[in-house]
Length: 163
Image (cartoon, rainbow, N blue to C red; front, side, top):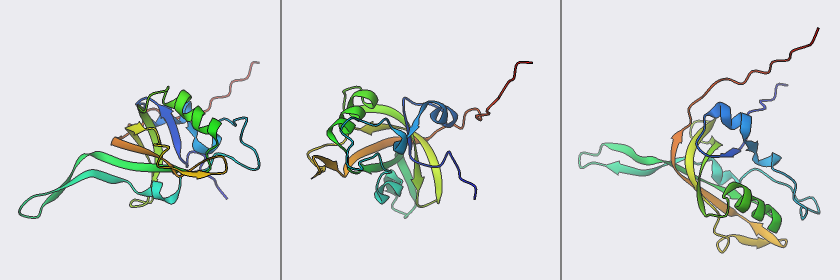
């Protein structure tokens, strides 16, 4: 069985190419372990709601023609976040502000494909998250003003041997 190592929910700060996302970013599941991640708590993929990528606005003219306006948007509801997991996201990814620029890869249910976007992301409103296990459940990151990330250079591993 062949496994696509580039499939998954990826994130990196800033607007970069898809190739740079894979080089510098991390899959959500591979974010660093925090000291309060006990009793089987781990980073998990966002909930199924993350798979819905929609236009920011669908404009309809009087003669019923439609087009998308304002870039795409989607959300990542994160599950089972401990306090230190939440702090890691806020300090290391949002750098203690509530909105920043990111390049992310998410699954698009409409196309059935993993797609990379440059976008802006809002840190979860923790008052809207559910309280769970001394942490948060369904802490939702909202991504908006999303454009398809450029592919960038392919990543090729080169191994050189001294002779």
